[in-house]
Image (tube, rainbow, N blue to C red; front, side, top):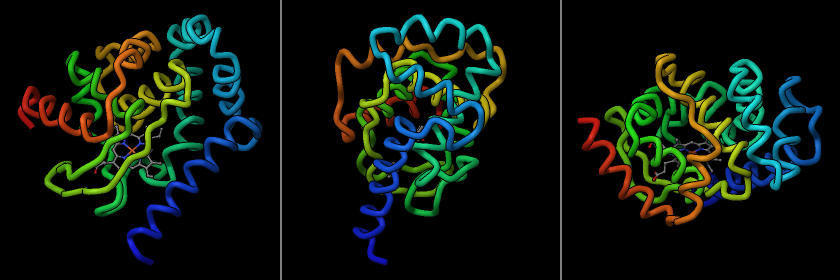
Length: 192
Ligand code: HEC
């Protein structure tokens, strides 16, 4: 399959995944019910984030459902990635979450996607990640927490990402290329 065909397959999977999340809440785990509820009512995005933040188990389940519907197609069920197509999410996101610019980077990646060559743990990737700005702040915070804590296993003392942090980045959207530029700055700060 050509690289272009792979992109189209991946993108189609992504769109399908997003549609499934909205229309078929019963598809995945019991957690699937939590995420669509949070998404269906953007006006209430902030209040549902509060119980989720104070209940780590349900917050993680919501994030797992968003990940299954939108991210697994490229990054794999355990965030292991795919050689030269999509990077693993099993270590760097935990490092990002430990510093303010890194936390901004995670939110930016969700909102603007990422475009251009990057290196992760010595492996090169040069592909395009779509943006997920269509998901609300609470859903994006929950999927980031799933990546940071469940997949990349950040230490428990790292604060959870909040819907407010995602909202703050939404105010000044970046392109995928700009998100990649900011990433270089974050890697420098982390000494990676
Ligand atoms: C169409 C495939 C695809 C989908 C779907 C996708 N990603 Fe990505 N993701 C990528 C690619 C490719 C990159 C690297 C982009 C580059 O090479 O510039 C990336 C990069 C990332 C990064 C940055 C990693 C780093 O080290 O800086 C994070 C975090 C991430 N993705 C999380 C997610 C999450 C969470 C979802 C679901 C909401 C998702 N991705 C959906 C392909 C995808």
